Image 1 (tube, one colour):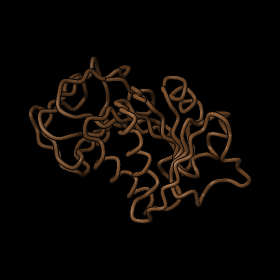
Image 2 (cartoon, helix red, strand yellow):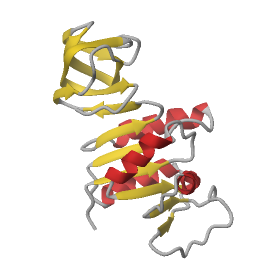
Image 3 (cartoon, one colour):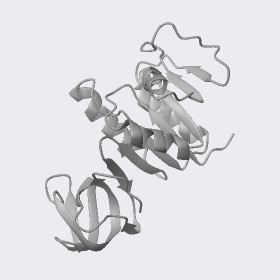
Length: 209
């Protein structure tokens, strides 16, 4: 089986159910990382896959539900997100949305974002969380941001970029993880050119590039 796109539901806080439902409609598959099943149930989504060590599944849950593939991976050395990302790669996914990545403890949040950056090579990756964060690699990206929209850039962990169409422009500048790039605003057609490295683009609404 080869899929172009997928939505991964984690077990954190669900801050934007409407955006997650929209992402599920666009995705070829819904993957729940263990306890992410509870969000699927709340959103009335039937996951295609449930993967993890199965220690956070809501009870009772019939693991024989038709149409759902359960993949029990007891490896305690990797997080359930790592396991879901591995599955997405095996399925050939290129566009990946992640929801409920935050909440459940600061350690989980930091580990989740570290795992996403580590595994993002070759993936078109978007995090949905009361707004969106999209991880962009080398190339020219035209950002679909309305005039006046506030957005931020965060290097992952270092990048050389140019930025036009914004209040604060950048010209082949090196960004490192930190406050440089925080709190910009769209003033026209926003064009981000990533010359080296990768950059998170964080915006309050749907973001296409």
